[in-house]
Image 1 (tube, helix red, strand yellow):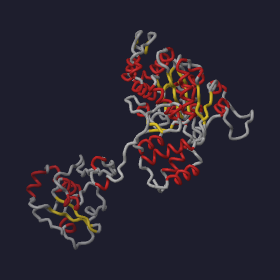
Image 2 (cartoon, rainbow, N blue to C red; image 1 turned 135 degrees about the vertical axis):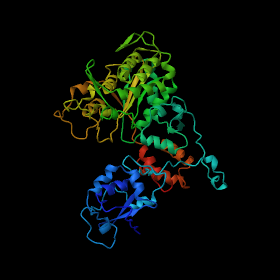
Image 3 (cartoon, one colour; image 1 turned 60 degrees about the horizontal axis):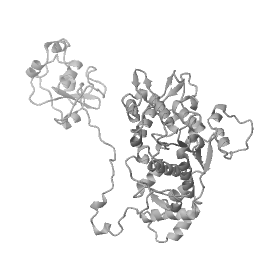
Image 4 (cartoon, rainbow, N blue to C red; image 1 turned 180 degrees about the vertical axis):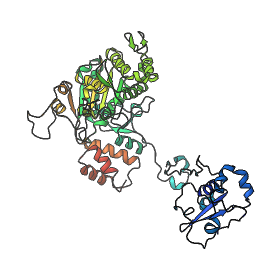
Length: 514
C-alpha cells in the first residue's frame, strides 16, 4: 500500500530530486520502487511545518525556484505512466533505504556514519568438540567396558627391557612437551591413554653408546640414524632424548614438528637478516624459540652454570660468572639479541664439563639441501650462510664440539622436497638411487660439513617379540574389539612387512576391528 502525499505537505515548487533524497535520509519520507516508477511514502503525523522547522531555508530555496512540481502529476498517482525524467532514476540508489529495511528495523540496530545498517558477523565455526569426562559417565551402560590407563613398567633402556613396552616419564621438563613431537607420534600419544614405546635392541645399543660418550668429547660420537621410512628413527631419537634427560644431560632437541624443525631453518618461513660481523644471515625468531625451549627443559642445570668470560652485546655488558639462565633472560627481554646470545651460550656449553650435552636433530638431511631463502639479488642462500644451519653442521662435522657429549641426527627418506643429498649419501655409505658416476655434481663445502659422520642403521622390521608387545599395548587400551587376536596380529604384521609405522597406522588403526 502506498499513501498519497497531501498538497499541504508538498507545494507545487517542491520538485528537485536532491530534496527528495535529503528528506529520505532524514526519515521524513520514503521512496518505493515498482517497475521503474518511484512513489513517495509518507510517515504518520508529519506536516509541512515540521519539515520547515527541521530543514534550513537554503535547502528549500532551490526547490522554490525549480518550477512546477511533477509530484502531483506522476509520483503521487500510481496509475500514471511515463514519469518525469527528473523523478525516473535507476533502480539501484545506494543512498536510499529500501522499504523492507524500514519495516524490519529494530531500535538496537547500529548504523555507520553513512546511515547504513551494520550487520553482526555470524560465527560460522563449528566450535570445539570436547569428549565427555569419564567421571560423568555414571550409567551402568558405560561401566561394562570402561577404559583404564595402561599399566606399564617405568622407562629404562636396559637389556632386560628389550622387547617390552615402557611408559615415558611424566616430568615438568619433559622434552616431548616443550620441544614438540612429529605429527604421527603426537596423534598416537593422544589416542593412547599413556605415551609409551617399545624398547628395541637398537635402542639399548644406542643408549650404551651415549653412556660411553658421557665423559668423552662429541668429536668421538657423531651419529646419524638411517633406515627405511617408518622404521622408527624418530621414536629412537625421542627415546635417547628422554633417557638423557633422566640421566642429567643438557638436551638440545630439534624435532620434526610444524613450528620448530630443521626444515623451518631452510624453507624461508622465519625472518632473516644479514650480519656484517659474521657475514651470515641471522634468524632471530628461531633463535629466540630455541633459547626459550632450551631454558625450559634444562633450567635446573643451567642455573648452576656460569659464564667463563666477559661478553659484550652492543651496549650491554655481561660480566664474568654470570648465570647462564640470566644470560638467556637477556634474549627474552631483547629479542634482536637472540642470535648472538645463542652463539655465546653454545660456546659456554662447549667448554663446561659439569654436564654432558646432547644435540639431537630430526630431518637432518634438510640442512644440506637447497634453501628457499633469497638474498637482495634474489640469489638462493646456501645453508652454510645461514647462522643456525651453519652452527648445527659445524657440530655435526666436528668443526665445533662439546667437551662432554654427543651429536645425534635422524634423516628422512620419504621427503620429496628435501631429499637426501649426494654428499650425505657418500659420507654415510648409503646406496644411491642410480649408478654412481664421477660426473655427479657435489659441493666441496658440503663435503667438509659431512666429515666424520657415522651411520647407525635402524632395522627395517620389528621382531615378533617387539611387534607382539606393541599389539598388546593397543589391545589393552581398548583400541581393538576383535576377540581373534592371534589371527589379527599375524595378518597385520604380514601386511605391513614388519614396518613399525605401517603396522600401527595401516594395520591396527585402519582395520574394522579397531
